[in-house]
Image (cartoon, rainbow, N blue to C red; front, side):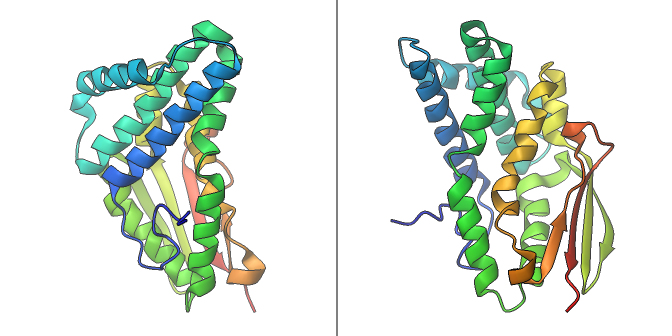
Length: 224
C-alpha cells in the first residue's frame, strides 16, 4: 500500500492542487463525521457539510484570484463549515479541538514519512527542500499569499509569508480561532526534517495565525 499520497518520497514532487485538496478535505470530513459519532450524534454529516462547502465557495468566488486560490479557498472553508456544524452540538472549545485533530492527524504519519524519505534519498537534502518550497509557492499557494525572500543562497533560504490567504478567509468568516489549525498542518512535513540526518534545520518562530506579523519559513544548512 502506498502511503505517500502526495508523491513526495520520489523526489519528483509536483503540486497537484485538485488532488491534494481532495485528499485533505475528504480525510477531514471523514474525521469530523467520526467525531460526531463519538459524541453520540446520529446521522452522517458529510453530505450536508459538502453542500454547505459548495455554497460557501460560491459566495466567496471573488477570492479566487488564481487557480491555487480556488483550492486554498475550498480547504479553508471546509474548516469553517465543520466548525459551524460542530459548535452547536459539542461547544466552541471542543469544536476547535475536533477541527484541529481532524485536519492535522489523518495525514500526519504519511507526510512525515514521505518528507523524510525524499530528504533521505536526495543528493542534497537542503537543495531538494528549497526546490519543493519554491514549487509550492508558485503552484500550490499562488498570488493569494504575499512572499518575501529575505535570503536565498547556497546555505540559507529565508522565506517570509507577509500575507496569508488562509487567515484572510478565516477573518472574513469571523473564525480566526481556526488559524492555528492551518499552521499546525505544516508540522506534518516539518517533523520529517532531521537536522543531524539531513544537514539543515528549519525555523518558524511564529506565524500570522499565532499573532505574528508574518510567518518566517527559514531553512539553514547546519555547519559541518
